[in-house]
Amino acid sequence: MSNVEFRRFDTPEAVSVAVASHVLDMVRRQPAATLGLATGKTFVPIYAELVRQVGAQGISFATATSFNLDEYVGLERDHPASFRAYMVEHLFRHIDMPAEQGRLPDVEGDLNAACERFEAAIAAQGGIDLQLLGIGQNGHIGFNEPGSAFDSRTRVVELAQSTIDANTSDFPDGQTPPTQAVTMGIGTILEAREIVLVAIGANKANALHEAFCKPASTACPASALNSHPKVTVFCDAAAAKMLPAEGPAHT
Ligand code: GLP
Image (cartoon, rainbow, N blue to C red; front, side, top):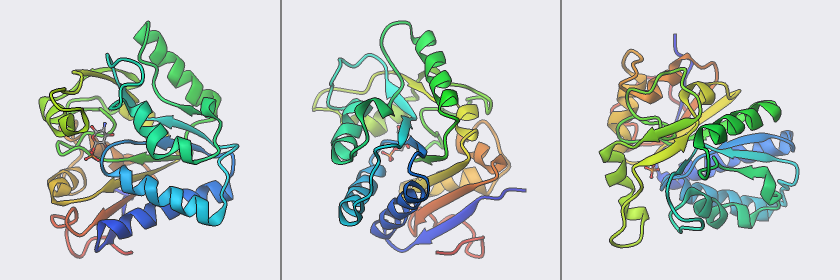
């Protein structure tokens, strides 16, 4: 039976406040927490709210560590649409976490060796305490596209055309995303002690329905989360519109 808990909010703004507060509660309780971080449009206002709360409450990330889910392969270093650039822009430059404690998958040199190093670094850190996830319209988590094995590990993947299309607006005019990325695997993600998945907007409603209202299947990568003991889905009313009204939902 799935233990997934749903927290529904009327507005995207309310989701951002709740998710930011949830993350900061962990950092306050456990200053040396290891966070799994996500990118994407969903997380832009969440990081903005987190930075606002960090400033207002004086919270330190000096002893925290983070591992990002994924990174494109083949962008030149410092490309503005790389996930590293995103993290620096939206979070890292605003908090006091030392740069070397904010890791993203390495996408240069021998990629298979880099993937193994990334997994080893997570393990050496004692695993991830709280993993943040968005969800793709096709149900992907990280860059684990439909068909990804539920026990997959950090690896090089080919992106679905729908993912490339969805992310093209993040790139300067005339540029499209690379076709490859490195992503934590679904098995890697499932080892996090706690997972928070965030879905905003009507274009995520079907993905939530496929993930949490149907039997788990590799056709919908996020459905793997049903087997995890501690998953909370934070969503707005638009994203929740295909979830059963009487479901285990509360704010
Ligand atoms: C991207 C990322 C995912 C993200 C998802 C949704 O491609 N690799 O980690 O969660 O797709 O993105 P958005 O929040 O922009 O809808």
